[in-house]
Amino acid sequence: MTFIDRIGIDISRRLKLETAIEWAAKNGLKHIDIQLDTGDNALTRFDNKRCAAVRKLLDKHGLELGLHSSSSVNVAEYSPLVEDGVTQYLKRYVDLVVKLGASWTEMHAGYHFTRDIKQRMEAGKARLQKIVAYAEKKGALILLENLNKEPKDAEVHYLAHTVEEWQYYWDIKSPNFKLSFTANHAHLVPEGIEGFVKALKSTGFKRVHEVRLADCWRNGFEQHLVPGKGNLNFGKMFKLIEGAGFRGHYTTAFGTLDDMLASRAFFVKKAKAAGVKV
Image (cartoon, rainbow, N blue to C red):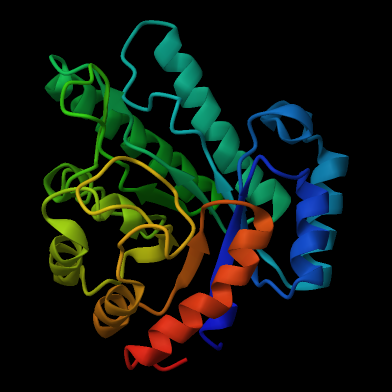
């Protein structure tokens, strides 16, 4: 597969799923990522008939589909009753991977409120272990994303936004549990992309199934900028990641759909200039 074919697009909430599949096929994409939380794409709106129709569309176009759960749902929830709802929400994403013929579902470690970080991490890890066991039975793949930092004085902070926090979940051992590395999130913290790649090399990059792309400012705030609007060196990043053995897919997540389509050629140019085989 050529380098450009490895670059897909995060549809997020921009299009109805069926429309997104047709749009992706029309534009020559090999994979897309989408969230199923609202409107026509809400988890509860997929009955067996609709799921079967989506599977046929994916097969027709030879397209890979990833499902992206919402980071606003706190995987690290421990409040009675609410925690049950979070578990059911994640299980539904796993169920739809199978029913829709999707290839993976992306999840997160949750968030804490500064003083309860230990309890939140323990609760989130326990829940992810439970969901991964469920995914094993269903035959679904789960990806855990490294999330973004929040301002230092914020009360709420995402978990797994540093190398150390992300690694806390890596000992969940299962062929159905892999990683999604968001390069722009790594660019926001002191260890940077280089620090994350160094840590990931310990696994031979074998567990990294996806790399997500957007621009931002080094040690800055969470912004999904169009490439060239921040200072992330994409050529250097591609050389590091490809040099570490990554051969999976990339997913763009910024701007408009047209912005992301146009960026694919930009990324190929930067990768080629850095010596990456395209």
